[in-house]
Length: 352
Image 1: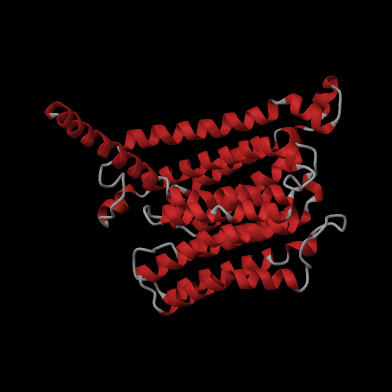
Image 2: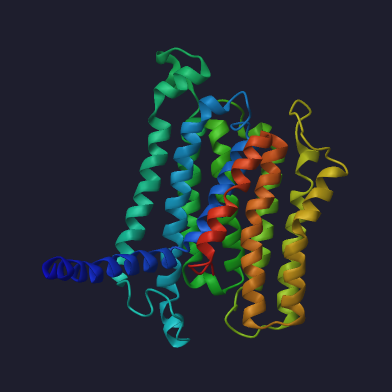
């Protein structure tokens, strides 16, 4: 009995260390927020026709690979973010895994490069999977090489561009006027990655997606706006600067509410473009509007952080509306369900 009790007591520190290590890495990569990036990919896939009832059985493996890519890139970006902000976090005594030494800088860098490698190799694999193209595009194996590389390797091009934007953001450019723009490009790239699913599988073409490009534009402007408001979330901000960021974010949401207006006539819409769709979008934004208003009236770190957290979480719901409009109810349900793990994990790990 004493031996067994001793064995159990010896195993407890090891278990606690494992939990502590997982908690540190989860905090480093902002685990609750990764589901918003997944939502971006699914919304983009719906815009490109890859999540409709007629195509989902063929497209889901490619969409799954794109989800893996966006997770790897998102975590890479979060790690680079904390490496870039290391001195600032130490000076402000923020309790973050790198600044307080729970994770070493070397381990963080190695993890970031490994995740980037996973994303690039997965994107290459999508383009090299010629048998998939032979089946979906209905051509002979000898004619596969005639498929435009812009379609076959679209995910790879978008992945490379997205990785570049992430790296540029997590540099000296972050605190300049270019910083929010780069963050907007990162979010736009996540949605464009999903759009590339339909393009590389032959369901559509980049040039026939005006509504897709409008969605990408609106999503980028929305993100750039709330990023501007969050630039100094740990400090007391000027109400004017915060309000300016929310105005830009509202403009981006306005563009997103007009996406169905630009859809080709042969694409079925589940919600009337006017006035139902903008109304639904506005109703979904009401909790965010409330948080944004309080962050302007009372620009303290807590109110700003709550508003930014709401802005990030709302991405899932805005993406779900796009999924409903262009992919159907099951697509919307799949996207909307991502809020569940995001909220649960958000109780244990910081999202900002």
